Amino acid sequence: MRSEEIKGKVDFAIITIREDEYRAVLLRFPREDDIVGNRTYTLSRVQLADEEQYIVATARCIDQGGGAAQDLARDIIEDLDPQWFLLVGIAGAIPASEYTLGDVVLATRLNDFSVSAALDGGRKEYATAGGPMHKRVQDLLAHLPARLPQLNGWNDIGSITIDRPPVDLASTNFYGEPGWRTNVQQSLERHFGSHAENRRPLVTTGPIASSDVLIKDTQLIQSWKQSSRHILAVEMELSGVYQASRRLERDYPILAVRGISDVIGFKRNADWTTYACHTAAAFALAFVRSRPISPKGKEVPADKTALVEPRHSTSSVILNLLSQVEPPKSVVLESYTYEALSVDIHGRIVERSYPKTDRFIEELVDGVILEMVEIPGGTFQMGSPKSELRREDAESPQHSVTVRSFYIGKFTVTMAQWAAVKKLATVNCDLSPTYYDYIQELSSIDGSIIQVIHLAETLARYPRRNVLPMRHVPWREAVEFCDRLSIRTGRRYRLPSESEWEFAWIYTETFANGVKIGGTMIIKALPLTEVLGSLTDVRTLGFSEVDHIRHRRQSAALQPVIQV
Image (cartoon, rainbow, N blue to C red; front, side, top):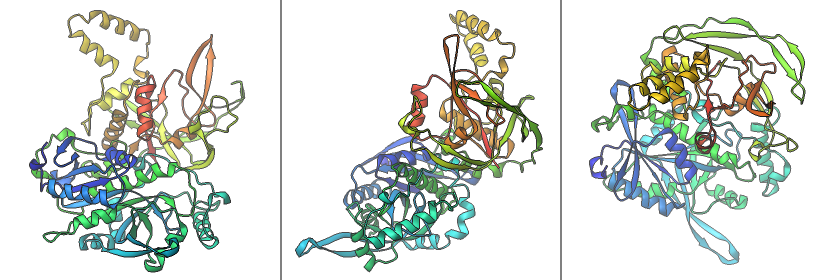
């Protein structure tokens, strides 16, 4: 699509810098088409109520810094003339008791430290520029606490898609002058110490500093705070977008959405960068879906199958669509007794017990049911010790994780359940056929009779073939399954997170008659049914992990989750 076709019809232009920021945004605003002008942009649509929609264009600036961001913003204005800019990515934070790693800061004001003078003795003097954000942005952020119900769910695990990384508060991870180190330690102890609550990310507002330099120097930050004492975070691109947006004929509103990836004065786990990219992108999507401005997007013809919903976030899909279904019926919980096995390192059963938990039944289509069992919340050690055989680097460091109670499918999703949900209305994409559908399809194609007979004979060996797990499930279809299930039941279903999956299942490897059975599930005080076979799990993972499942694993099974 040429930019001339859509200029003046774009509601939000999203600017990202880093590749991980760009990926996090695209997971929530999937590409429908390309827009070609001075730059190439990805076109997305976000469906609202009453058949309204937003048109969103996303661009990435390859180079960091205000100059490159200013050039990109100018091109966006010339090509697209959007209503608003969203600058989505990460920032480093000033230590504080109110916010920390993983939280989101929205800029109310820019303090620009890009211009400096080199003085004798190596000293630098900065000329502070910048100013307040657009009045519409300021007004919106002033009333943000009142708008939080409209943003409900943005910080759920289903929206963020990855677990909160660990924090190591060892003294060697702090740097800077003694006073600054003390402030950083007290701040992080408050948020991540032994008595800290394992909370979800939060959003706050305040001034943000911008500079063309990646700031790790605590002394420099302290000098900046002498003239701008209220700054919350530091980044590198807002100054450039701010300058480009201020024009004689029009002042473009900018909402800077910055996930906190660093606290200046602390050497954090590198995974916080990815996590902060996702919290910023998750909030950006929730913000857009809250309808902060009147949309122009409905003027642009759209294929209804391309309407944008977050590919990795069931929760924010349901926030919009639950209003279109009847109020959910109360589930009928019943007590469920199951057999729990404890095994030794050789796989021998050493203890049997019969604990109880709750379960409920979801009625799908054509008499097919889905049985959900409760996993009571608790705390466990996630990861593996360095002494464990065949461990991977991704399993470090081993750390304590607290998981809230949730319900999970007692079995992996069966072919019968998949076929039932496949009959429900499409949300974002079609669901692949089961083997039975495949047989019917092949039977209508000349020359495929041998394949049909082979498949029919294979399936005929299993008298209860409807309970076979649905295999080779692509990520997008796994999310689609949960979305359809959520709309059908009026309850929010999603995929289990990494920590929920590890908490619920204990994996081992079994060898039978010299044949390795990968992914054998052994029950240990958890009410999930044993499944044998080389099935990998489909969980709420980041982009690279999804690729790993799609391209390197042989098959995948899924189990839906509902939070309590």
